Amino acid sequence: MKQLTLLSLFAFVTLGYSQLKTEPTEYAKTITAKELKEHLYVYASDYFQGRETGTIGQKRAVDFLQNFYKTSGIPAANGTQDYLQPMELTIKGDKVQTENVAALIKGSDYPDQYIVISAHLDHVGVNEKGEIQNGADDDGSGTVALLEIAEAFKQAAEEGNGPKRSLVFLHVTGEEKGLLGSEYYTENPLYPLENTLANLNVDMIGRINPKRATEDPNYIYLIGSDKLSQELHDISEATNKKYTQLELDYTYNDENDPNRFYYRSDHYNFAKNNIPVIFYFSGTHEDYHRPGDTPDKILYPTLEKRTKLIFHTAWELANRKKQIQLTK
Figure 1 (tube, helix red, strand yellow):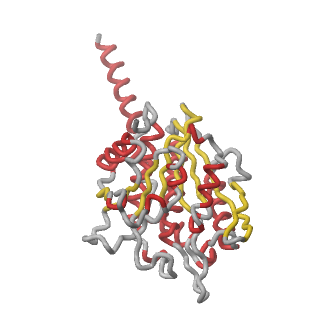
Figure 2: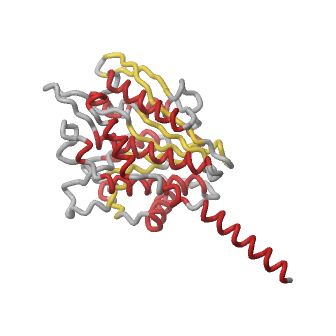
Figure 3: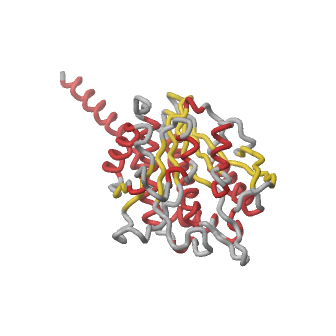
């Protein structure tokens, strides 16, 4: 009896250690303001010339992302050309060659079920005065958030705690030209849309909306979380309450919102295909689509916290026993 008790105690301790090891907070800790800042000061530098779709600056952005995933040991998504999904777009009557960038962390238990985490890699380029519009917030902030989230999941996978469902890290082109890269993806998906359970779209999460009544940065706007799946909305709420305690602001989720942000970022092309979405957004500001959108104005500790919320939400969606359901 004594021996059995000791064995039981050993099993309990071992199980407890295993559970601690799989706790997502351990991997969320790898998402840091320091690394987000390091990435963004490169990605939103003048070298990328504002990343306008089809320009040399946008090609440099694609190279940066491709090299990041290669160096990190995160595989290219199936069907890409070494991470790239090339396309020809018609923009203002001109044929433009451009590409999405996509990487994959394959699920262990349900590899044919996919969570797509997206951000747009492009911006608006150089203005008529020759000033570079660097797009640090729009959408450099979302882009570097994806990189940090991918690294966190990669570390988890290396330690035997990889996601049960597959995660697609999708950097889309042509958002500023009319959501064209995400439209191309949903018309030519790398993975079946019917097996795509959710899209978490990250677009401008690095600053504060000056129109808010308070200057407290501990918030994030969520748009679309309840429109197709109440279950996704509830998971998002519970995840935030447990891990990040941000104020989840649904101001722009209102059907009557005159800004119509629900229709203005890449998640919308997934929603049109009946895929539940969450659009993460911190609001516009005086530097929106202007040369002043520079990396020195980003609130990096706030960007870290918002990125961790997205990581934890993706972790829950990827690892829960049952896939989320559409609201009937």
